[in-house]
Amino acid sequence: EVQLVESGGGLVQPGGSLRLSCAASGLTFTRNAMSWVRQAPGKGLELVSSIYDSGETYYTDFVKGRFTISRDTSSNMLYLQMSSLRAEDTALYYCATGRGTFWGQGTLVTVSS
Amino acid sequence: VVMTQSPLSLPVTLGQPASISCRSPQGLLHSDGITYLSWFHQRPGQSPRRLIYKVSNRDSGVPDRFSGSGSGTDFTLKISRVEAEDVGTYYCGQGTYWPYTFGLGTKLEIK
Image 1 (cartoon, rainbow over the protein chains, first blue to last red):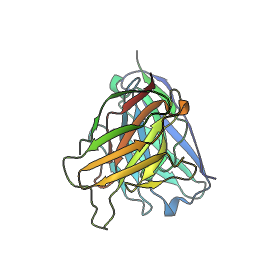
Image 2 (image 1 turned 90 degrees about the horizontal axis):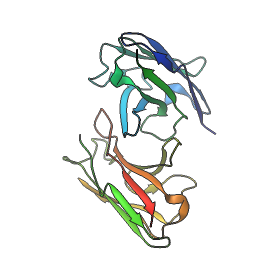
Image 3 (image 1 turned 90 degrees about the vertical axis):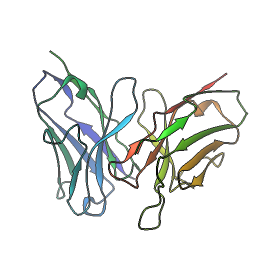
Image 4 (image 1 turned 135 degrees about the vertical axis):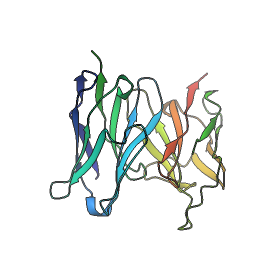
């Protein structure tokens, strides 16, 4: 059974940084692409970043240069390092496999002074 | 790729059918021959759950009252007989072009 458990969210000031983690079990990172998808309060789903099984990374324009996705294949951990955070980055951040087969429960990031 | 869903709100009587449309501005057939169009269901306060993948394939545990169809740019999710547990928001999502994108969502409620 695949399980994805996110952590690391919290309240941060504008311009601050935060590192999200996703602990994955029941799957092999080197055979699966992984993504971070966010959902602002009351809004829809928005892909943030993906890392493919090859290790290649992709970012959407609104986080490029500010966020970094990475993984540790030895421990099946996925990360999202977020910096220069803005109020509009406030959202529930989900870890998901590739094209959305499995989702975690999400971790809330609030950017506010 | 901006995915357009309709309707955005869908009041349905229990036991009645429901249908949600999803349109893409460009065809979703990938170069590998697969159309990566999925449907997701999100209950209030819960994570999204994928129901349908590659247009018409039901995920494990998804009741057979849910069906997906379509090709190219036009896709449909149908619920043959709506049950109380089906309330929530439904999203279509395309995984053919990066960045993968989702529709705005269709909120299904019971009349």
